[in-house]
Length: 188
Image (cartoon, rainbow, N blue to C red):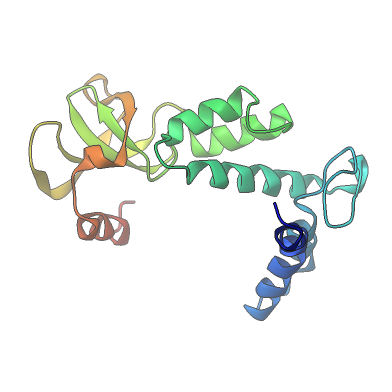
């Protein structure tokens, strides 16, 4: 990393807060969280080198979400793999209670993930479910068939529609316009 890149990285929390201000965000709590989400218990974080109790608990949650988003953007890695790595503590020294809270809220198949159902349909996760492994999904097509004309909502609590595995986005084999229609419809 060059010195210029390091300076940009250290400025990122403060610059992000400034961008939020320009966008009309006036909640000072949000600015505090954004400005301190890269601080670390040992004081090695940035930009202020805060330690332990000086770091607001909500900033720790934002740091966890920031790390999760970074890992979810990696090519070739399934969201469920990222969630498993998070659960195993491989994404950083995050408090287990925060990790559990995030997984409870998002599930092990985060919204936007693609999955194969027990009936061999490929579906996209639309919402988390009551259980981490039972998301709300919209079936897109049979594994070996063309995309469905309309979205078919499936209840993954039902044995025929349980999630068998996460699959790559390419498995969906649908055009972005099809997914756009899905995300802009009211899925309830």
